[in-house]
Image (cartoon, rainbow, N blue to C red):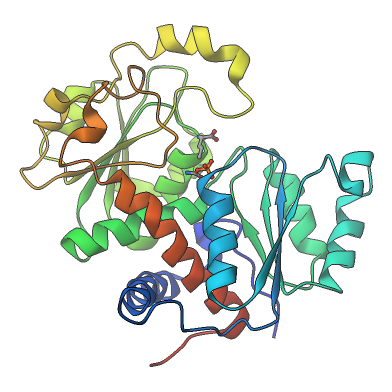
Length: 306
Ligand code: CP
Ligand code: NVA
C-alpha cells in the first residue's frame, strides 16, 4: 500500500477526517479514564524537524509518542546536515531507513512536498508558510466536543489570509461548513485555494457583518513566523480587525472563539478576550495532543475499529 502523508487536509477523505475527530475524542476519554495505558507504538520513532519555533506542536507530538510507548526525536537544522545543505530528498531517504514517521515544520510548502515525495514513511505537516492542518484537527475536535457535528455551521476567520486561514478553507471543504473570511484589502488568502472551496467560502471586509449570527469565530497573529519585519506595517493595516468581547456579542448565543496560539493580546484580540467563557483556547491547545495521536495511529496502523 502506498505511504499516506498528511501535508494538507485534502490528503485524507472527508470520511477519514470525520473518523479521526471521533477517534481523537475516544483516545482523550481513554487517557482520562485509564491514564496512558494504551501503548500501540512500542519501539516506534517519530522524527520531528523544526525549522521554525514551536511550543504546542513540539510538546504535543513528543508527548503523544511517549504516551503511546514510542519515542520522538527533535531535529533542528542547526544541528543536522540539513542546515549544511544536505538535499531534502537525501535526508528523507535516510530517515525512511530508520524512523516510522516524520513530522516537519518549515517555511516552504514545496520543500515539504519534496521531502514527502522522497519519503517511504508517513510525513506530517506541522506548519508551513501555506498550511497548518494539524491545528485544524484540534480545532474541529474542540467544536465537536462542544457542539457535535460542524457540518452546515458558520465559522468566521478574522485577520490575515495566512497558513491557518488556508487550512480553515480546506476544513470548510472537507467538513462541509460555511466559512466567512474577513481580511483587510491586500491580505486575502490565496485565490486558488479559496476558489476551490466554491460557495462554502465568502470574503467580507466588515468584521461586524462577518460575525453576525456566526457559530464560531477565530483569528491568528497579524504577522506570522518569517514576517517579523512586517509587524509595524501590519499593525496599521489590520486596525479595526481586532476580535473583542463586543464583536463576539454579535455571534450566536452559544458561539465559541478559537485561536491556534500564541496570541498577541492587544493586537488581534482584546487584552481580556481569552478570559471570556466563549474562548475555549486552552481546551483547543490540549486537543493537539489527542488529535495528533489519532493522526499518528491512523497513518501507522490504519483505522482502529473498536
Ligand atoms: N499553534 C501552534 O502550532 O503552536 P506552536 O507554534 O507553539 O507549535
Ligand atoms: N500563522 C502563525 C501560526 C502559528 C502557530 C504562524 O505561521 O506563525
